[in-house]
Image 1: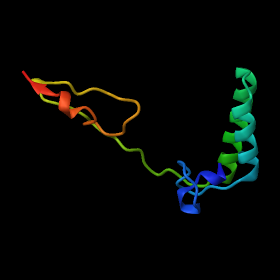
Image 2: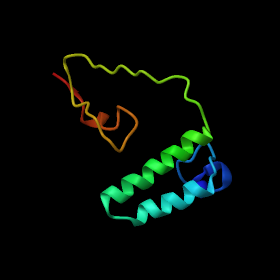
Image 3: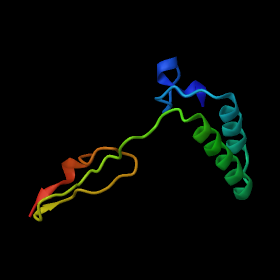
Image 4: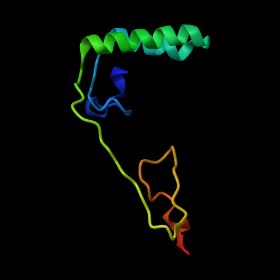
Length: 94
C-alpha cells in the first residue's frame, strides 16, 4: 500500500514509494476476501494496474550461486532470512 513506504514515513516493503489509490483499494479488498477465485481476480487486476503504471523497470536479475565445501555440515535454507549464515552456530566440519 502507499502507506507502507519507509521513505514516506510508513513501515513496510514499498521501497519504491509507489502510490496508486486503485491499487490501495484492491489490496484492501484482496485482504478481506477469502474466496480463492475472487482473490485471484483481485490480485490479477492489481498486476494489470501496476503493469500499466510501470513504476519501475527491472533491467537485470541477480544470479546468486551458493556453495559450501563437502565437509561443512549445517548450512540450510530459511524462508524467513535473506542471509545464508543465519544458523552459523550450528555449522561444523566433519
